[in-house]
Length: 244
Ligand code: NAD
Image 1 (spheres, rainbow, N blue to C red):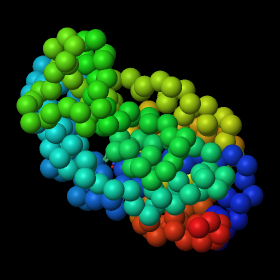
Image 2: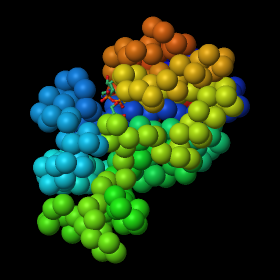
Image 3: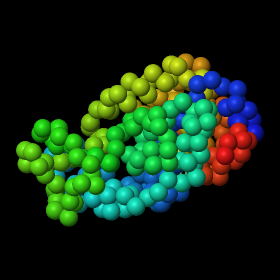
């Protein structure tokens, strides 16, 4: 099946990768759902935008623990690196990611649409001034804007917030101009991101999916399902594509 997928990739013009939390699991970042999922340990309410407005300190304590103390130490794995190499060698045109961990960019991917924003920046809720998270001292919570004194929020999408532009429009545009989508490590349960592969399929786009187990996409829209860990399958795909 991997050889068949590689043949399809070789003979396809415009390829978009669509990634979920699964691609970063082997970097040590757990997904939200399923076995070892973060929602088994934490209450997702702390990422609800209305809860954040009302309880910024409580939200920030969780946010710091998960996204900055813990995620912050993760490094790209072989799957992120393979995807970046596929872009550099001209096979992959862009990456639409639901992840906020910056690991695609760290691996060398250039054309990345961050559908849910990024944990790398903090933004002021009042004046919208943006800071690199690295420059902000998170030992005093909640962090405040140096310009206006208002509370800073991570620049990723909370429950109840809209999808940022230009990532939103660019992602849906890919569903119209791509010939093939490479889905990696996504349950397909998070709306509206989960609609993107379905829209692509409606537009005649072929779907290759990599996951350790079937997702919402597998029986509905996937043409070639490659069951297994993202690092292993992506490394094999690179071998068949003869990319070093
Ligand atoms: P999810 O947490 O709902 O599901 C993860 C998927 O990855 C599952 O289908 C699982 O079977 C698969 N998976 C697990 N390990 C894998 C591996 N080694 N190789 C291949 N597949 C593997 O993830 P989701 O659908 O992406 O939705 C959760 C939302 O939470 C996303 O929108 C994302 O924004 C956010 N999130 C991001 C991060 C991150 O930035 N790394 C981490 C957790 C959650």
